[in-house]
Picture 1 (cartoon, rainbow, N blue to C red):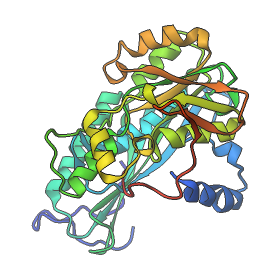
Picture 2: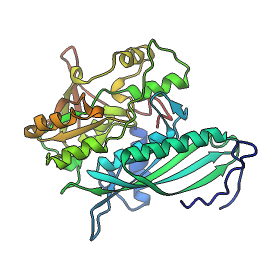
Picture 3: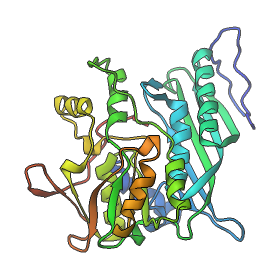
Picture 4: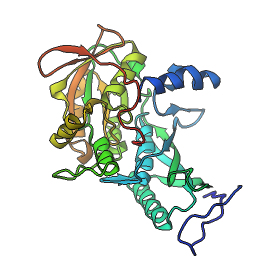
Length: 345
């Protein structure tokens, strides 16, 4: 690895300072300021990864930043989150993850025990995903200016689909498959952050998604669109796809699996599980004729054993997402103005 920062001193067991060598507002920031400054358009940035194919293999590339607080939570930590988050973004491009890069932003005074635990977690998670962390960097910032540790990761994968999954490929009549229950990651992190105690420990859904996605691809399932449910959760992912495709999406509230404990906590705190971040869930949009086979494949994988159909693509209400509530009333979902829970990934 290309670590340019001097190694922390072990005599103090702390990092020492070394100078030198999902909501509407976020969407508007990216589309109105960041992309135009780089000469890009919203259409070019409709997902969390990009097709960078050249003359040889078709490649996908993704980059991500991780600022979660706290660093450790039930079901994971910032290290596993960085590995799974980056490889999941590549999987949503229909790619097999191959290589990762990891940049550590360390705060002066961070205990070396924490650095060691996270390094081990990154290594174990990378091996689980079948990828190698091939390069990286470290930087140290002044005490009080880094909140312990931030990680910036990037990854490269080999695209295995003839056509990269995209909202532009969805069509009226396509069905929407959800890979599992929603909201557990947000509530798991919140429980530790706020010191909340529940009757049972709610564990994050943080998990790698490449294997179930690649199982679909290698079985020849005709996938039109893939999207993992991170910041903004299921609702925001559907809104992004509807907006980019100029198609309508309708789903049933009863069809969405939510863990009873998660549902109870969300009701207590005034949170909506449909907008709660997940780190091991995705939606797959595909022709109705492919649904049964896709469900059989996904339910054979531990991570996606609860996969289910939740809705479909429509010609009506272009660009909108509509939900049939448990009372039978249909209502239109809206973008969040901000984040329900900041620092969630």
